[in-house]
Length: 375
View 1 (cartoon, rainbow, N blue to C red):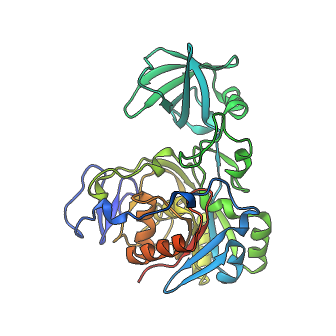
View 2: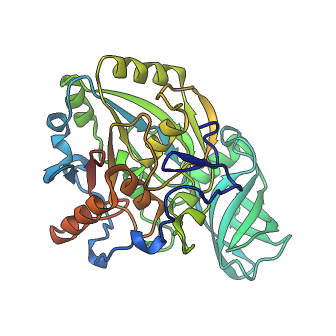
């Protein structure tokens, strides 16, 4: 594959962004990835302690476990790859005159490390906002509407940047929880800890890499004692990751790009683990997509920083990842399509039906799966 950006792989063919070829497997309808989920199974708070969450092992058979069982489900020499991005409290409540406005920042216009003044954001309500309107979030923080986009998106220009803006976000912002987690206006202060992995260290995400939420210091120590190592990538999760697919054909959906960083150290450790016979275990879809986007056809990695919008559908040929740990995802979502590509759509539909019957908890604060590759 010549470029990781903007590519859908199906049946070995690569489709560069904007040049989607019709050769390949028959197209898959988005409705093929639908399933029924009772609303009461959507988790509103995480399990306590985190590693007490349930884990469904999905392979030739289905096995019910707990996350704390992971050291016994993996082998010495396996390498877990986790995403160390840190979620910004990027949901802000303010006023335009007397009207209330909620905005969720989702992409800076510049390097995230610089915390620039201009950000793309989703606003509610957006239809009454006009270019030049001022939104007051606090006496210490204001922003001007610099431009309006589609589907509620606006570009905001804050009255500060850099460390001053970062400090204001940390003081005033709420965690950008997905809409299926219900919170009162202003959010729940407990989410500042709960919606962050224990190993988060690189600020820039507007959504958590949720598979990583299950890992506690005790679990990481138990894995290390078993001879199972950990390594880290950084992918700043964007809001587009969780957008529903509205196109009739799944491959017509466009995945938003996200910034990913694979260090030379992590690439070298992955190569060493593979040479020694260890398996590469991607913790979450973000880790998997980062690794697959930086791997060539032989599975060799090129470290570096890039924009990743690799959209994985059934038929994709995985080059590097051997196992995957991931939460239970939304129907018709790109994330459910990815796990269907990894383990097979019939197997994943059976796994989700089992999870519903056994009352597993779904989505960001829910339980998780350990996925083996499909036949």
